[in-house]
Length: 214
Image (spheres, rainbow, N blue to C red):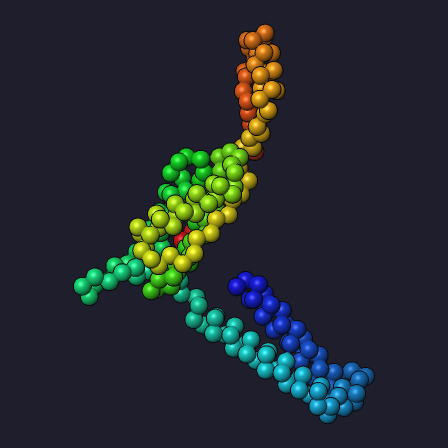
């Protein structure tokens, strides 16, 4: 969807530039006569009209978005019971998502964004901050399944999409081969003051404050 929006934006800008250039050259510059003569050519005139229509349509879309898309949905209807309505706030959904991500203590929900419509279609985007290096593929699949199941308890079947974004961990953990770890253990027996471990942890700086965004 983002690619389609980007394509529409590029076409809108190119159409605007073409129309403005074609009309500007007929009003000002040393090529006024040539530019005016081009308008009498049918293919050129059709191209100008098409680009002008694209420009007008794009301007109307931008105007409509500016007028009607400023209001953010705060409450989502998730079910109706005996004529009544059960609703949940976006903040509650964000809090539930954070709780699920942080349940096992290996990760922190650095940011949670909830996009929703008044009558459902909830989309949740979570930025995950691991405390140490994790297998992003397996951990991501595990968290995704847990989020789908856990959010269903809050907003029913209105969850349309759950996406995860992993950022750099607070600490990078490098696994050491077993033979090297055994060699280190032998060295440690000779030098009791040295600490032995099969992992090397490199600090990546102070932990960040989690950010919640509904």
